[in-house]
Length: 501
Ligand code: PHE
Ligand code: NA
Image (cartoon, rainbow, N blue to C red; front, top):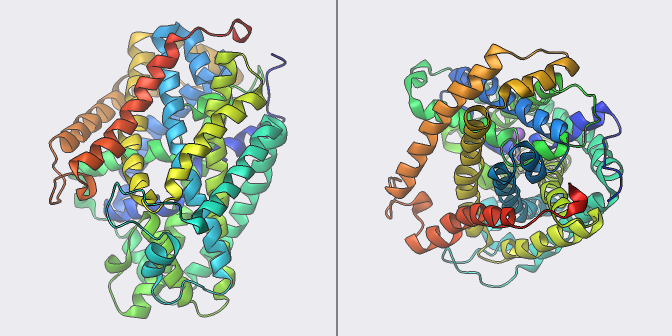
């Protein structure tokens, strides 16, 4: 294998890391999570989670990648042999699963960018989404054939991703982020400025920022903050280790982590303001409380926002295009980062070229992902997303900090590695966060998650997540999360190609 790929500039690395972190989660997840969990008061647990878990883990993962200079599996292998390698593969397979369904959401956003030109969704935006666009199957678990209108943009998304991955780390990933991220910032600022100047915006912002301090005594609020930070920063599933493995031998680590963390949070805050200003406008237009229109995820982006855009006082089409374009840009830069985890891992493990790894890895992911372009796609996506995030990302985070801090006892080694080349010096706060605070909070969170899901404590008829049947939860949820772990262990059993080591 030739020379290892490397970022062209420090800014290029930061833009790529921010590009991974800033994703759909910032736009459609954060605003609602904050609103639901204490509004303005949520910023306390949120900042706490950012400073005791998010940024400390980001620093840890940047150090691992930069120090061991390998994909997540190779970096862990170099750290502590096969005892650690499986953690890297586990993260890679979690990333693999996420890439299969994340891609279809970008395809929907592309479709809606085009629909915006003539507000094609009409008045019944919900019916349009689930009927005309997704042609959603009647029952979860039904596959029901491809939906051509989704399949075509979905293939287009993969063509773009293939193009960027084939072009390489510097000429592909760095180049794409250099264009997409500044474009995203401009597009998003335009939307937010328009949103806050709409009539009724203040009503929405009041609802968003109104602090409910009593919520701070509520454990679930703190767990929500931690859970969101993990997802939002793209930590604990191989991404940030992979990206930092392309840093030059001498490069800042800690300051880069702070910049990435705060840039992501800044974007979230901006999105919260924009989304709730727009929701306030809609609530006032329709004479309903904000609570009635506030929501998250697919419904917010593809049903509520089209409705808001319908009611816009002017330039409706333009703002529709800008909003959905921002989803496309935020989504693509995240999707590239997830795919790069398995491109790097496969090429090193098997000793094959980068291009072959793209062809095999992203090739297989794109084929599997077509399941989400079927009539049953949305249900599969929902179950896979919930289980892979809770029992993949958050769970790996817990095992990873325990392994690194308590079992391999690497924190001092990492500190000695990162400090000399970094602007910001890490010390007691960083170690305490990773050895004590994060394991405790995440440990409690995982315990509670297992209890809730195994004990079927959801407030639904079946007691399962979203009220899905046992068979569907088992087949589309649990088995997906467990498969990522099992495949990770299996891959660890194979030998490394000698060229990789
Ligand atoms: N950090 C992303 C977000 O906030 C989530 C993500 C990143 C998901 C990378 C998948 C891959 O939306
Ligand atoms: Na994010």
